[in-house]
Amino acid sequence: MTAADSQTATPPIVSRNRWRDVFDGTLPEGWEPTLTVSVIIPSFKSKTLEFTLASLAAQDYPEDLLEVVVLDDGGGEEPVELGEFVPKNTRVIRIHEVSDGWGRSNATDIGIKSTTGDIIYWCDSDMILFRDNVRQHAKWGHFIPEAATIGEKGFIEDWTYTPEEVYEKVKAGTIGDDYDRSDLHEHWSKQIYRDTDDLNTSDGRNYSTHMGACATVTRAVYDRTFGQDTRLHLGEDTEIAYQLWQAGAVFIPAHDAVGWHMGRGTIQDHAAKVAWHNDVHFAQRMAIPRYRRKADNRIWEVPLIKVVTEVTAENAVYARPAIDRILNNTQTDVHVVLVGPWSELHDGRRRMLADPMNELYLVKEWFQTDNRVIFAEERPESVFPAPFRVDMPITVELSSESLQEMYVMMDKPWIGAIRFFTPGHDNDEAVTVWNSAVVERARPYVADGRSLEDVVAQIAGFEWRASESAHISDIRENDDLGARVVRVEPRVAQLENELADMRIRAERAEESVSTTRLVARGLNARTGGRAGRAVRGINGKLGGIPARVVRKLRGLLAR
Image 1 (cartoon, rainbow, N blue to C red):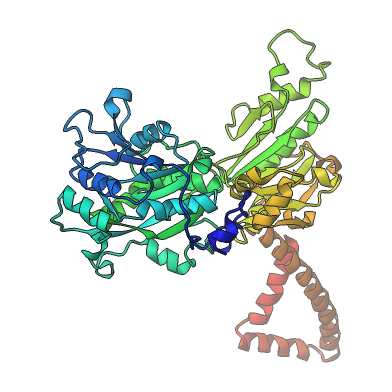
Image 2: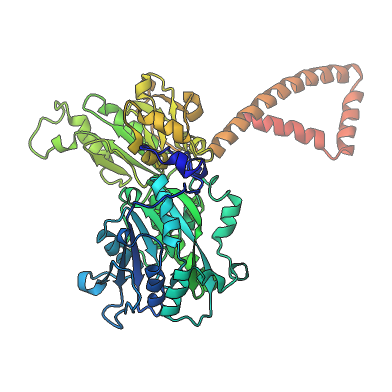
């Protein structure tokens, strides 16, 4: 589909990450941009900033739609110089004058908050952007409201440019002729593009390709995130890319948005050290991919699953056993949002046992030291940035495997939502697991009679499943709610089933052995003991194997 087909009052919704189905990048004849772009350039004692600004000054994007903010993060030492060639709307913010923080994430955060552009473009201070770079980035946001683009870059290690030469070459459209991109270092993201049909088949999982050196996102999507994590001083572009994914972004390689990266990339020389450092911080903040979290039974800053359930004074008796079963799941990367009238509880005098709210007091006491349980007054609209949300009544009982089964059903097919027929509950109360990234993309399109379920179904599918598939039952039917809640590992359950099967087979074998023994005794008596001596002789020749088999069967039956 071309832009001419896509440019409507309400743009078509991108399913999964299949951006090409909505807009293939082909612009209609005479198209001109209308969205404003804010370019954010963090700079720490940069020696190449003048080249970056010169290339921006020569862009073919309308200058009245383009603003550039340079964030001088040098602490007052060696203040950055803008040079002679700068875009019309350029300003500098000296970080040490407005913030005690430091680092790229802090500077980027300050820069973004100081701008209002429809499209946010974060750009490193060592980039030379080709003449149509900004236009090639920005065009996607005009036709896909959730666009997050990643530009192309070639790594050049030697150059003789002056800022004036950069300006002139970019203006003339010849800067790209100075190096053969095929001879330069290939960024690791290129192989991912080849493997995923330019991310069309990625479902957004390859969010890490959204590199900060030359990347954009629409402000509409960025505003759904928490913004830059200013605690990070490495890997901050990957962390915000994860947030963008969970906020519904559509990741698009903008192959025509090209630039030269002046110098080698950090990953080229320090890949192992960078990964070793970043993986610890990423594990806390990014639930996917799963390989970074190398331990179970841990509490992470951003959980894989948030379970949302509501308790009242009338059904509070089921809260403790229900939530204990949630927290005892084999999938331990879980938080619970427990919605209830907690503000009505007080420390004043009350008749404890006669208080109709007493069970709520007991629930609060039971979970008060478990920080996986979040006490809330209202149901949260979003569980961002947790990738999965489970909505369930407090009167539902989960088995030890329920949450893991739900996660597996959702994850690899990347389904928008699954609703389970729930015993003892109406369909509108049924347990539902939601894909957060899909929900966040869907939410702006819920209007004119279209439900959230309808839009989610359009983006990634909405399915119904049997309760048995996730081991869901009605906890009100459980006659032993006071029993100890113990996690049953799937492998243990499997071994128990195998043992039960072995016992049945052993009992059948014992019956056969007993019958054979009676026959053998009769035969031995009729032959004057000769049959018994013959059997013992055969047993001896076979190394005693027959006798050992019989003893093993008897041992199994004795357990």
